Amino acid sequence: MIVRVLLALALSAIASASAGETRFICWRGAGGYTMTGQFEYPDALSGKPVIRESDLVAFEIKGFLDGAPIGEWSLDHLGPETSWFLRYDPVRHVFPLTDPSGLYQMWNANGFVDDCGTPGFGFNAGNGGQDICLDDTFVTASTIDPATPLISFANPQPADCIGQPLLGKAR
Image 1: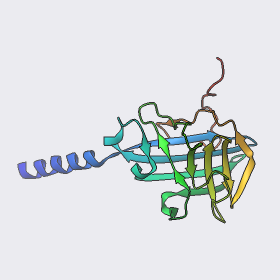
Image 2: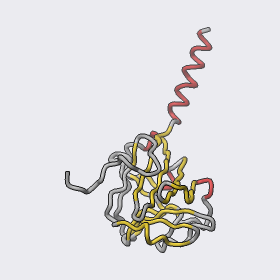
Image 3: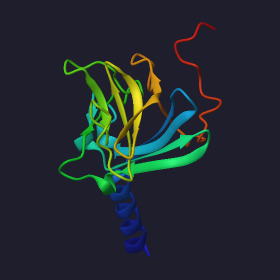
Image 4: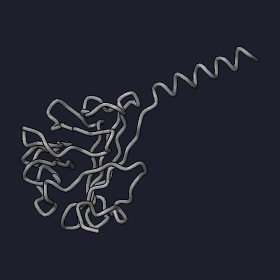
């Protein structure tokens, strides 16, 4: 009996040590475009100043137009030609929107927002704006100001992102 309890405690400790932090995304673009998603990284990285794409153990995004699904992308589709650049601050729960390259986030969409595959979906945040790619096409109607805060959430978010704070607005 004691051996079983000790074994159960040891397995629990191992599981806890490898557990990850899961965070959720909800982005509201222009023209009725929204994106939700989730990502996971090892708990050991929670105090790190910046988490990079290579640190993630899971990542997926789903795009919507007026609440209807239009595409998705996940690490399962990552290939050598994929535009994949991510920076995340796990302490403040934000995706930093500054980088000397001018590219801040490339989630299956490059700086021209035209390489997400056909069919395909991707997101880009750079010095020209935050916007999506759909079927290798830059969806300019989705573009919002590049300085719009991009934050993560502790819980899953609805496809319309309704109820999320209007960041940057005076209260």
